[in-house]
Amino acid sequence: MAQPVAHLTRQRVTERTSINLIFLLAGLSFATWAGRLSIIDAVFDFSGLNLGSFLICSTIGILLGIALIPTVSKFVPTGRLLCCLPLGLAACLVILGIAISVTEDATLAYITLFFYGLVFGCLDIMMNVSGAQVERRAGRSIMPSLHGFFSLGTLIGAGMATATIALKIPSIWHFAFVAVLIAAFAYIARQGPTHWENESISPTKRNVQYDRAKSAKRLGLLLLLGLMVAGLSFTEGAANDWIAVASVNGHGFKHQIGALMFTLFVGAMTLGRFAGGRLVDRFGTRNTLLLMGTVGLLGVALFITGTNPYIVGLGATAWGLGSSLGFPLGMSIAASRGERLGPKAVSIVSAFGYGAMLGGPPFIGFVVDTIRLPQALWICAVVLVISLLLTPAVTRIRKPAYKDA
Image (spheres, helix red, strand yellow):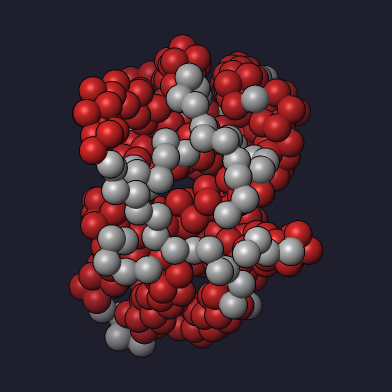
């Protein structure tokens, strides 16, 4: 029997609130430890190589989680994963806090960050797949705003990290408090969804031959989509790593101005993600990606060529806006390839995105000594142009019609 319209409406609101909380707590957890990297570096007296190795532990864990979760999701219900994985993040934060503040054990910190990345990679795929399900039931684009909540979580986490460092609160108490918040958010989020079940469709004999004939083309489009997302993710990651440094070492600004440039970038990205759904609904995915990519390209150029803080700040803001929608819309397109692909498609595209975001920007460091900052950031402009050229092809992937479930 069909459910009453009023009940469906309330149900959608509850689902939307729940998935918003999942994205928010993911961003909060990430920024909590990332915001204390300077403290972690000081406690363990890392060299540059050791700090890079520490961060790579998280990267390896994330990529492994992305690879494993499509298999895990076949056996564990989605709702259970979305409940338990945040608890895993909370536990990792507590253990990491113990390693930093109590035992000062670098080995424990390395291992914990690896498992944090593993859990985070798994959660990233499942929350994007679930977000795409909510998006289809809602009948409008909400994936950008979901990633906006992730960005909001990172802003909150970074603010809390800054405040606790200023107040000289030890990492263990900071991390434990955030862990309690994450557990509470996860509990609230779990109360809402009734539709977060694994989607599984067994192809009938009638369409097996058709699917095999289309599989090569489908994979090709998926790989092109991955390359486009990788390009946009690279420019986002490069900004995270290099905007503040380039502002100080390249443009000669003071450290507080460099921090302001990074804040402008992150703030613009958060705003772009919250506004992105309306842009997609009005102009379509292809036009929105082309528009925002062009804005991002202009922003990179202004940031590099600007001669005063105002022009450079305008460039950082445009760079943030232009980078805001590539990853969330890529996830939306991948997830909408149909329930048959499910987490597998999201996993493939997400691997491209995270690989480029986490592994690409350090490449800029290899050319800085030769090209110097900020001119080395022209690499971002080249990558953005390639992504823009790929956009018309990958947006030919058609989304299934939105429907009530």
